[in-house]
Each structure stands twice: as C-alpha cells, then as structure tokens.
Image (cartoon, rainbow, N blue to C red; front, side, top):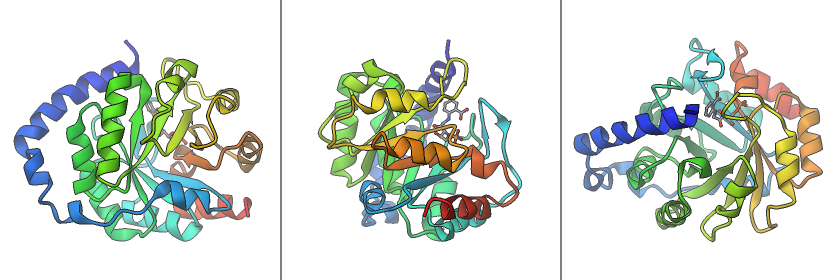
Length: 260
Ligand SMILES: O=C(O)c1ccccc1NCC(=O)[C@H](O)[C@H](O)COP(=O)(O)O
C-alpha cells in the first residue's frame, strides 16, 4: 500500500458521509457556486514568475510543517508577494486543511485559487465550486482514463480550470485530454517521498505544447526554477519551502523578487 492508496481509501469513505450531509443539489445552491471563476492557467501564462504558492499545515512526508500561522495572513502574504495563484489543501486527515480554509482564502485574495484535494468522485468537484475554487487538481495515479475524461469534462462545464498531476510517462499518456488546461509533473515519489526535479525535466518533452507545464514539489530555490524554465515549465507549485518559515508571505516575496 502506498500513501496514495491510504489517502484514496480514506476519501472513498469520507465522500459517502459528505454526500449524505450535503447532497450535490444543495451544493449547487451555495452562493459561491454562481461565482465567476478566474483562470489559473491564464494567470500563469501571462506571468513572468509563475508561482502557485501553497497553504500546507502538515503532510505525510514531513508531519507538521506550520500550524502556527493564520491562513488569511499566509494567502494575503502570497498575493502581495506576487504569486499568481494560491493552492489550498482541503484534506483534513493527512494535511490538516479544510473546506473552510478554501472559503476563507476566497474571501481574502483575488488571485485564482486551486483546490488541492484527492479527487476520486465528481461530488468533490461540485464541492470545489461551491466553496469558491477557481481550479481543481486531478491526480492521474488515483483515477482511470475514463474517470479523468469525465471529471475534467465536468470541471470545465463548471468553469473550473484543471491541473492534471502525473508522476511518469504512463500516467501522462492517459492525461492528454481536451478539458485539461495544465499538466503538473510531481517531483515527489509517493512511495518513498524523495523529491527529484529531474522527473519534471524528463517528462517535459512528452507534454504537447497546448498544455501549460507545471512543476510541483521540492522546489526550494530560484535556480531550480530557472533551470525548469529552459524545459518549458511556466508554473511552479511551492508549499513547504514557504510554509516552513515563520512568515510564509515574506519568504515568498523574497523568493519571487529573485525571479523578476
Ligand atoms: O507533501 C506530501 O508529503 C504529499 C504526500 C502524499 C501525497 C501528496 C503530497 N503532497 C501534495 C503536493 O502535491 C505538494 O503539497 C505540492 O506539490 C507542494 O510540494 P512542496 O513544495 O514540496 O511542499
């Protein structure tokens, strides 16, 4: 069993309970369901820095990263720093996040918000929309080719951008779908948690130019970004490197200034 197997098994049960508590037809009545979304892909495409900064209290690989800082300060700090998108982890069991975090982020920033979740059921896509997300993450390792097709179609119908995450060539091949905006290469091996940005470099040439290329995880210095840009990457998802500091927004600011 990998950590992803554990997480998705947990999610299956979680979604059943959530559907009973708030059925989809009620999610559709949430005020934010009618919100006009902002395109994360577009924001990154016109950006010179391409940073998606993540709010991440803890993780399976690092345990507690930062449970002291307040989310509004973190996300507004990220926006002021020049991040082009904010990623909000909404999983509570493994990452200490929540859907309330998404709501608070939506009230606090005006840049696009990515709901970072382990999506295994269309219900979670309706939830993302109801709680104010502009974009969702789909993880190829958790979904069949047919599910990827259906879930990305649904997200686009709800006007949400789709970031599809892959770890290898095989996952990438089933992810090159018409309703996918961004392909994210995750540099973290979810079996042993080791990070290696060579995975992004290796897969870059297999990603057709119509998809925006995002590199995710383990990005700890601007030199890595400069290197990844030469492989066509335009977006960079960074969590721990900012969150492990006392003031994530200020750390992001200093980081982004070096990229300008
Ligand atoms: O971060 C983990 O330990 C982790 C474990 C299992 C599944 C997913 C995990 N992380 C999710 C992410 O994709 C990262 O939070 C994101 O790419 C940012 O990575 P980092 O900059 O290394 O915090």
